Length: 256
Figure 1: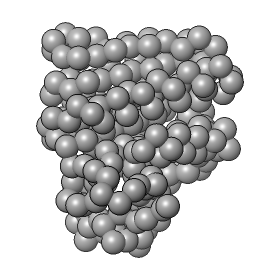
Figure 2: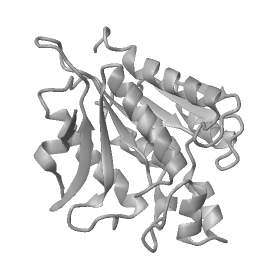
Figure 3: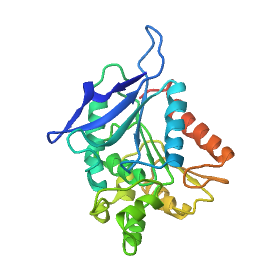
Figure 4: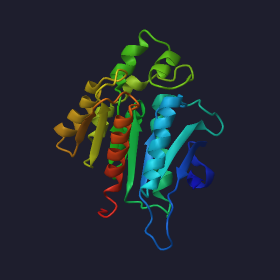
């Protein structure tokens, strides 16, 4: 089943943010499901990245979780948002989820992949209501800034597994502090990276891990053997799907 967030829109300064809420099959009288809000970070992605996202969504829904996704830009200006503005968009979607009676409001988790790891981490500082958070192959703002010195926006987006982006899409990211933001509140945190990732070095995710660990908060850092940036190898993909699903589903019987 696929629904839309907030009856079709979530308001953000007058601009509706587009999103979809994928609901699991439920039985009458069952408790409301937990939710995973997915932050992709790019307006559109290529086939390999899209396949990962589709499998993540399908596997989480099959495990009994709702999955919320932003679908790129606003209803009035599709795909015109900048990367730095996606944090505001994500905050609006999170608020929209937190007032829906058909969801377990105490079990809303955040999942961010690649550039979406920056969005997810910055959102993590804005509210203590996030139940748990998982980053897959997160990239840092420093790495984005360094690559922009010699590449166009579209080249950088392609490098990250996406399609063309609006001019200036990456502007302003260097003002964000995602590693510090991720560590602002204590909640279960899983950071997973492919050991064979040639796009975002596994060392980048260690910056996130170290920030959370230094704050004395809960964090698990996993390097997946044979895994590239989208965990394309069958064994790596299977491990990724299994660990992410277990991480978000295991709290079903242990609500705060």
